[in-house]
Amino acid sequence: MTDRRNGRTPEIRTCPYVKKCGGCRTIGQPYEETLRKKRAYVTKLLAPYGKVEGIAGMEDPYHYRNKVHAVFAHVWDGRRERNIAGIYREGTHKVVSVDSCLIEDGRAHPIIRDVLRLLPSFKWKVYDEDSGYGLIRHILIRTAHSTGQIMVVLVTASPMLPGKSHFVKELVRLHPEITTIVQNVNPKKTTMVLGERESVAYGKGYIEDELLGKTYRISAKSFYQINSLQTEVLYRKALEFAGLTGRERVVDAYCGIGTIALSAADRAAEVTGVELNAQAVRDAKWNAKRNGADNVQFLQGDAGRFLTEQVRSGKRADVIFMDPPRSGSTEEFLLAADAAGPKRIVYISCEPETLARDLAFLKNLGWKAVRIAAVDMFPFTEDIESICLLERVKP
Ligand code: SAH
Image (cartoon, rainbow, N blue to C red; front, side, top):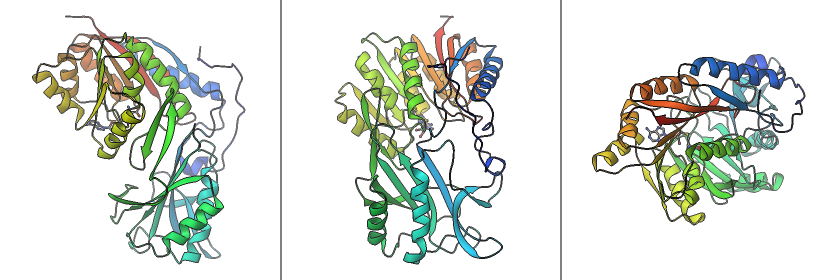
């Protein structure tokens, strides 16, 4: 059975961009069916390691994405030249104009539409990927589910943005719901959206959101789970699996802005979070202070190297949370996790294939997946989030 909270069946909706976009391949199918397929997929893939208990779906599986990206392009549409904002057509660098999306937060597109409309009045040219000519490249919008705050990140090819303060004033007048605007500068010919440099054009330069009663600051470049409602479902499961009593020394590896570490802090003796992205670590430290968590520390660095050094210096961990990127963890990290002598490892994964690979490695080290569950963080896409509790079976 799929684990749905009210048993109501969400209506089926269709999207005009489905063939060109490729973002949500199963839109137009009954949601329950997509959940069944995801569950069957992870069940089969993870069968050698344990039984998948179920998949937690959403009551309303639409408009859940709190991070919305659009690329700008200047095109000839057969009649006239015009600016468009949208997505890359799947597998290409051709931009398809997209004016609405069934999975993105509905507050984003009206803002994108107005930015597009304002460009000519500021004489801002859209960047051309082939020639490298032009200024305005991308727009990124982050919305906070619980506080309603909205961040707009305008990615430009150069730091010079003549008329910036007028633009900001006009955009905020049109959309008073925007709480901060950041200019990010990306001068490189690259497929990466964000560049190194950024400057705050309006507001604080970050938004705040709440998860499980804690408040988090999120900067433009920090990782933040894109589906806030399901993140709470996932974290509750992670805390349940961890079985903390208040006495444990906990490690939160690949911790992002510290959301798992801080959710666990009230139930542990001490928590150490480790994360590679410096901006995310800054957010995490701020979040620890903001939430009055004085038993939590955050360090910047590679999770594998950090844990290896901890073990070398004789430090142990009782519970390890790990939530690596899609590429999964590393043998260095997994060996160190084993050597740190924890009672439990809670592995959160956004890529079942690398989870399976890492579970195989841990199995050889004497670890067994005693509980596995899936959470539908990304309805109508092919992505699946899994969570797994590992315990040592061999000494
Ligand atoms: N646990 C967090 C973040 C998970 S996403 C949350 O739930 O929000 C994975 C995170 O791992 C990202 O923030 C990414 O920057 C970080 N990361 C990637 N490679 C890493 C490495 N080698 N060492 C530490 N962190 C890494």
